[in-house]
Image 1 (spheres, rainbow, N blue to C red):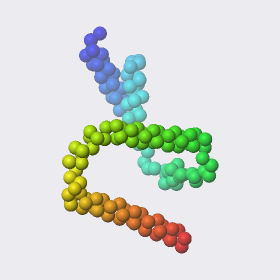
Image 2 (image 1 turned 120 degrees about the vertical axis):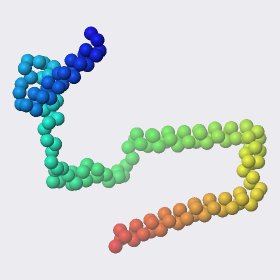
Image 3 (image 1 turned 60 degrees about the vertical axis):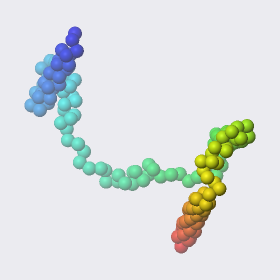
Image 4 (image 1 turned 30 degrees about the vertical axis):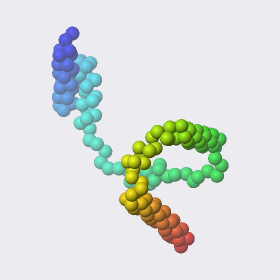
Length: 151
């Protein structure tokens, strides 16, 4: 069978089903059109008018976060220990690589960075100011949050 013949037959069955659903007539013994008739009827059906009256309450219940559990499950403790071990291994590997190959790659990096210039000092001070300002804003936010909850 040619693919175009199959596509044409399918398309004709869809059209017969669409017209039958529109006119309210039966599919006339065509099983392919009968299958598409159910699709055509469901597409012609009106959509629900609105959300349920308590939609917001339902969503609030669904997304409500449970209170933190006091005891940590065994799986979480295992994962935390494993993560700490991996971070330690990666840190140790980085230190070993820096000790072995640092003499080769550190001088070119220092030449590119121009750390002996005043610009490097200015950038370091700007970084320190940004970190300090971020920390200060976080402290103020926490202090304001505690004062708001206490009132």
